[in-house]
Length: 215
Image (cartoon, rainbow, N blue to C red; front, side, top):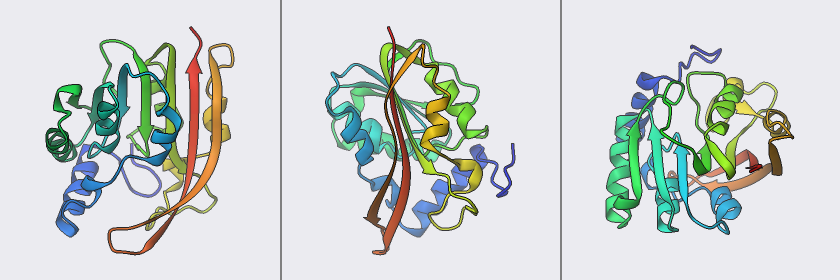
């Protein structure tokens, strides 16, 4: 599926993305800290089984493993996973993470998870359909945490501004979760700033949705 911005968000796109990131600034995205929304939203949960959908270079999966979670981390990019596995080994948590190279649009897990989380993942399928898909992998009583880019009118996808098809609103995400099956604990749009690897300030507009599947 090719989106309006021209990005297919397929394996070829993501391998090129990670290769370019490494070539331009070795270790740049591959050395990012875990997403602060993950730390804030699940830091108080008792560890169990977790799925990191679209794990990239593994910062979130590695953090979860360090907190005692048994993590399945899935990404379409072999290059990203190689970097992630190296970081996990260096961090002493390799035994707690299973790295899976797969297309999340077609991959099916063997079971359900007590936590399913995703951070800015953009698959080769509509964004909200992707969230529907991964929500189905949450076990009864488990938690779904979605962190995405906030949709804003006219988003062209340049710089750190996401293309329209790769962004959502908190309201749209929460509306996909059936109230008879889910308790939405958080559905917010949050602003944060960070310093990029080139030293420039980067402004991010995030969507954060945390929901619990009713047992």
